[in-house]
Every structure is written in C-alpha cells, then in structure tokens.
Image (tube, rainbow, N blue to C red; front, top):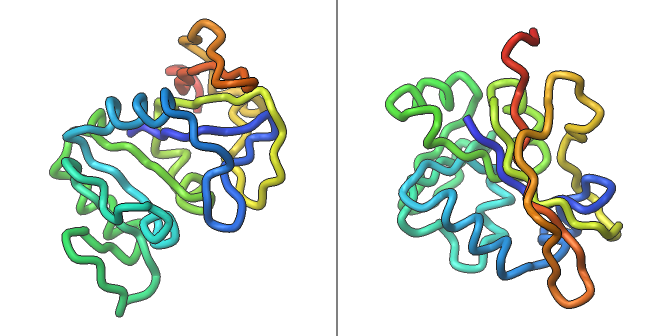
Length: 165
C-alpha cells in the first residue's frame, strides 16, 4: 500500500482540519497518483474535502461511528474490516490519504510513501510520522527543487527497506 501526503519541515500535515497549504502542482500530483485507484481516509479527512468524495476513485472511510453515513463511500469500522475490504484490490492501487491517526495506524502496512516535503514550518496540530527518523524507510526518489511563489518543496518517494523487519 501507499501513503501520500504533503508535509512541512516538521512533518506537519494540517491545522484545524485543513491542509497547511494548497500547492497546485502537489494537488495535480495527488490526482495523478490516485486517479482510478482506492483511497483510504478517516471520517475527518472526508469531511474536510471541498467536494466530498474524491471522484474517479474508490473511497474507503475508516470510522468508529457506526451510524456515520457517506453516500458513495465504503465505510469500515475497524482495521480488520478495512483489510478484508482491501483484499479485492491490488495493494499497489491503494493510497492512504489521512489524516494523522489513519497514517499512524496504517504506516506498518504500507511500503511506499509519496511525500511532498515543504521547506517551511507551519503552525500545525496534525502530523505525519517522521519517516526520516525511521530506520526502515529510505528515500528512493527525489525531484528537483520546486517552487510555488516563495515556497520551496520537493516530491520525495520513500520506500520501506526490503530486508528490514
């Protein structure tokens, strides 16, 4: 499975339920990666999406709220239920898109992370696990430096080392 996120220099991903910043090229990269694929998210992430469900994708929402309704989404209420649901898909086609607790719960099940690393520290209250601090993860691809107005960022691909764990 894949993780995909934009993080700031402290691995922050959000503040008050919103992304820290919206970079058009990052949004385009996200759309390109996830188009026609399966996206796994938490209830709060779904509720933060401007248009609701992500079109052209299978939306799976992990929520503890058994009464929660989201037309067009597959709702699961436990990791076991999520993994059963995911058995019908190729793991390469599954993208975990947040938020913080979903990333933390599914990190060990993933082997690739697509990270847009922004060279700026925002005020954040939600964080992605710091892959630079995890020995089992390594950067396998790094883009040229990108800029959006005065922001500098890179597209990074992390992969879990094969012989680790």
